[in-house]
Image (cartoon, rainbow, N blue to C red; front, side, top):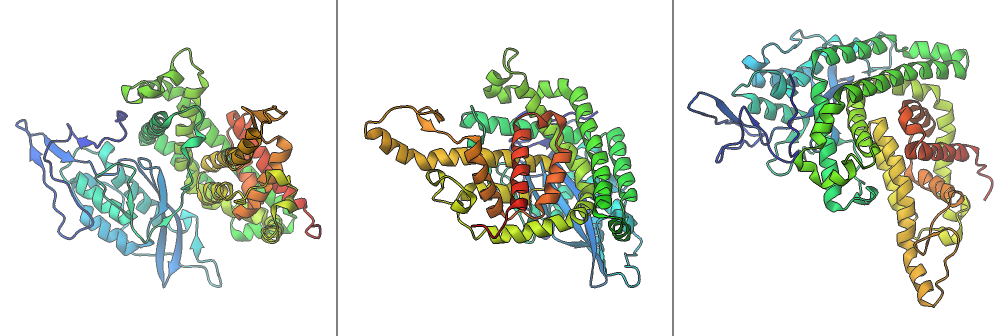
Length: 516
């Protein structure tokens, strides 16, 4: 039975009972790693897990040949800090070393491929990279080994070396132990960070600073609970079988070339068919978890640690607040478990299917980046002195650099809201001067005496920001987001701004560069 430690997502955890005063802390990486433990009169073992990352999601997303050796690309997401990154490139010897230093009774049954064989490309093949694990049968076992080490805190019996094992794994993945707040995750300089750093508290409308902080910790607690649910054998097997089935049915490069010869629509249709299959699985899994875990999630959200949000979640309040929060936590974890392992498979099909569309888009966007705001028919009085840099940053990082589709969708909404916020901020001074001159008449299209942007004013600005964001393969991206957007999101705020994003991409596609 899995039980989430949802009280205070900021507090450190302890195996068995709790943190004892004066317990020694570990520092890693370091030579001669020491681990002290003490025993209660009853013989119970107390292990300090304060600096152990308790919810780390791990996937081997790619393999490639490097000097005759198979190299592994490892994607990591830490739910406690909300950060994601790519670990330093690892080779089979690195996995062997990790196995040696973590070997104990608690890890003895974890799968591990000791056989030394690698992946060789076919004769004449120039494609030495492999996003599909079927090309390297070792890959599945190595991934299961890493995921097994990460889940030791919950799955296996309490073992005196559990913290030591966790610190070795964290170093292998490129992060160090931290003894301060869980958000202060220290990453090695070799890692490739893949995340958005733009996040602003202002995006949570109607929340003060304490409520914004609490909502973030509640979402993390809910997602950590869902992470543990996925450790249940029945869900793990269901997800694994689906991933293996999609990977086996994924077309090879040669098969995609054959489809393309039949016409561009054939390749696009095949990609859409596979993407819709993934969409159906993600949506069904999300709905299943929401229905089956809603009572537990309600219990978590009603905990006293999150009491500052009680006005949003009381029986008389808008029930959509709870539902939105639950769905966000569930959807994010569902995509981590089922989309991330298939990301390379889906991306390759989308990139090849919409290759010609995106080649044209890339050329146009490069040319359009040189053009001023006036070219995009932005009203002179609405133009930004900063060229809407904060909006482009959100789109570049949140849409372009993040991994999960649900996070990309959230970034599109955030970018749209940032346009309105930045407009009010940058134009408030001129409006204040206008009011000080004695003109206090309210005009149509104003809110609290301030002019707001209408839909006709918003779209040209949004187009300008998308161009400046330098988003890669926007055509394929639109297909991905439109297909994987959950039905419950398509009719609301997310659906509206996603439609605006698609309209902006279509407008860019139709722009005649000869016009100025």
